Every structure is written in structure tokens, then in C-alpha cells.
Length: 259
Image (cartoon, rainbow, N blue to C red; front, top):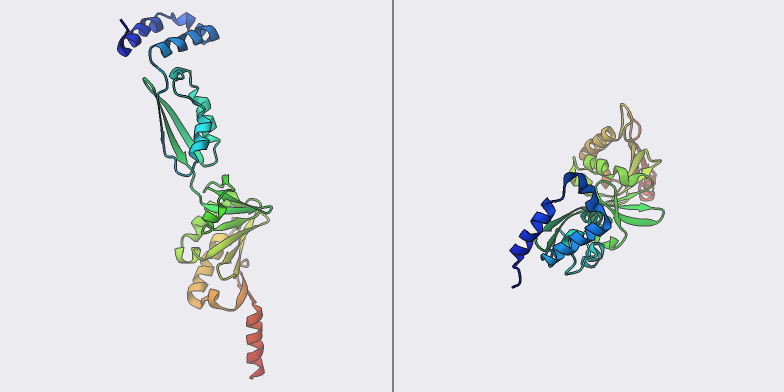
């Protein structure tokens, strides 16, 4: 008479418990390990169900390829650590948890990265997360609404920059591009093309944070972004330097001719 699943498992327990502590290392030997895996297969511990949680951006085909498992393979023969590494090597996967659920389920929980900004470097554009980790170069157009940061080191400073800008969300929403200059400071380009030059991030006593706060104050008072200027230079602590646009020059010349 065939043993039920419960009886098969109970039959295995004495064999597992009878291994003396001093001989534990011997269970790592390939022959013994293979024997043990086969006994668990006989007892019904084989993969029959796979559940994946948290998969949104990741492609199912890529996740399954990283798992590299088949129905019916011994559940206890699966290397969970290696599987985790393979999953976390996928573009969108930040963290993966792999769990066996006896008798036959493998449960995968993925924590995916979130697209935070676009980074342009040496002519290529990447989708990056808040830590500056490159996610992918695929489907960049889908993320065109995100701020574009440009230059060496820009990806690693994007979160600090966005945090500073978000103190004034209405202005932050108008910043389309941030250019990292010399890996030390930012030029901010607004949606109307006006460029605002900030000093070095950590410059004391007048750095990027102080300059941005001054710019916000001036913008609220004088509507600088509505004026005919090309560049607003905020790098000097005691003055603001404006570079007038060609149209602005023409208007100034026209005004002078009327005087």
C-alpha cells in the first residue's frame, strides 16, 4: 500500500535526526547530499508551485530565466542564495527574497527600484534610481517627465539636488535639466531655457543651498524667469549677474533710441 505524503515525511525524520553531531560535515559530501535530495523527492518535496510578488517593471521572462527552475525538481536542492543573487542582478530588482514553502512551493518577493531621474553621460541616457544606480537604457521616452541630470558624478548627487529643489515644489517642477560642472556644482536649466548657475555644493559660507534660497527670494519678488535673460549667475555671495537674451538686447537698444 502506497504511503501517504505525511507518512513519507515521518519516515524521513528519524533518518535526519540520527546523524551524529560529529558527522554533520559528512552530509555536505556529494554522495550523501545526492542521497538526501533523492529521499526528499521520494517524500514529495518537489517544486509544484511558484509565486512571484512585487513584479511590476521587471519582465516576467527575465525573472523566470534568472530563477532557472522546473516543475518537479527537488525543492531542497534549490540554492536560494544563488537564486537571490541572480534575481538582484536584474535591472529593476533592488532586493529579492526567496523562500521555500513546504511541501512544494517556491515564493519570490521582489522589491523593485523606482525611476527617479534620467542621467546623460557620454551621449547615452540612463534611467536611474534615487541612489544614482543605473537601472536601464530601455524605454527612456516613458520617463521624459523626470529631471535630466548631465555629466560625471551627476547621478550620485541627484537625490541631494532634488531634495534641495523640493523645498519650493512650484519652482522645482520647472527645472528640466541639471548639468554637473566639474563634479562640484550645478547649472539648472528651466523649462523656458533660462540657466541658473549655482556655486559649489558644500562651499562655506555660501554654497548651493544658500544660493538657491536667494534665487527663490528674488524670483518671488522680481519674476526673474519671466524676464528676457539667458543666464542668472548666483555664484557670488554679494551680487547676482544677469546675461540678457538677444531679444532683451534689442528691446534695450530700442528703448535707448527713444530717449
